[in-house]
Amino acid sequence: MDAILKTEELWKIYRQGRVDVPALCGVNFAVPAGEFVAVMGPSGCGKSTLLHVIGGLARATRGHVLVDGNDLAEMGDAERTKLRRHKVGFVFQRFNLLPALDTRGNIALAQHIHGNGFDPHRFSVVANMLGLSERLRHRPAELSGGEQQRVAIARAIINEPKILLADEPTGSLDSKNSELVLAMLKQLNKELGQTIVMITHNPEAAAYADRVVHMRDGVIVDGAQAA
Ligand SMILES: Nc1ncnc2c1ncn2[C@@H]1O[C@H](COP(=O)(O)OP(=O)(O)OP(=O)(O)O)[C@@H](O)[C@H]1O
Ligand SMILES: [Mg+2]
Image (cartoon, rainbow, N blue to C red; front, side, top):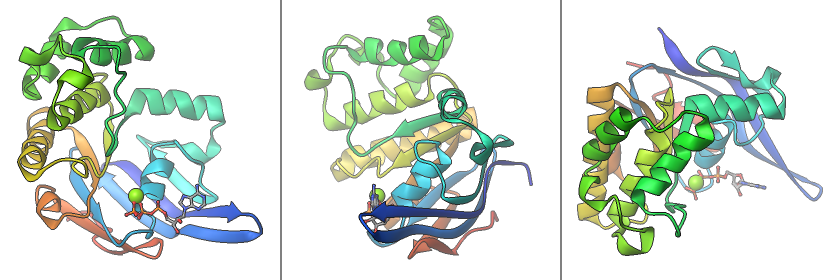
């Protein structure tokens, strides 16, 4: 299997005062390039922690994370940041857009930070696919929640990351906007081959994925292997 993302015996233990809180307890997980995976499980089982560690936002306590063949455990912070910037896109439940910038500005800023110049072709492909072409001059406060999340997704994928990581991307949306956002994620996956790992509490959202992984108490209990 050509895994774009792989974890090996991945542990994350948070230290809280004198207490160790184990959040990941030996996770083995692999995602082939082009797959759309949903991660489900009860609150506190370690889903967000897994996403943060595989995306290089947090460091593992033990074990390995391979992103496109690069082992995050062997990297310093600067190297890890660089890899994250080039290979990973994040989407969160809260959209985290910059309020002073319009849609175009929020997306273009990501291209600027990445070090690419403005790429008009990629910009229009992404804006069209996310249904934002008529909203490019709107600031976040002038957009609906669903539109804001679509801007956040556009920003996350504009630089063609190898992996898109989404932590409850429909958690703040009503059912109509949730369906729209999920349909667009599915389209990105099918038409652009975007690899996606999406955390969700909603079985209807998980049904958009090719595979559903179930976590409990810091381990994957079902769905660890690709079909
Ligand atoms: N920064 C932190 N410091 C200490 N403990 C933490 C920290 N972040 C998470 N935890 C703990 O690690 C465990 C896993 O948390 P995590 O946020 O990964 O769960 P989750 O599955 O995403 O839950 P939810 O569905 O509620 O978002 C929990 O027991 C949580 O309290
Ligand atoms: Mg979470």
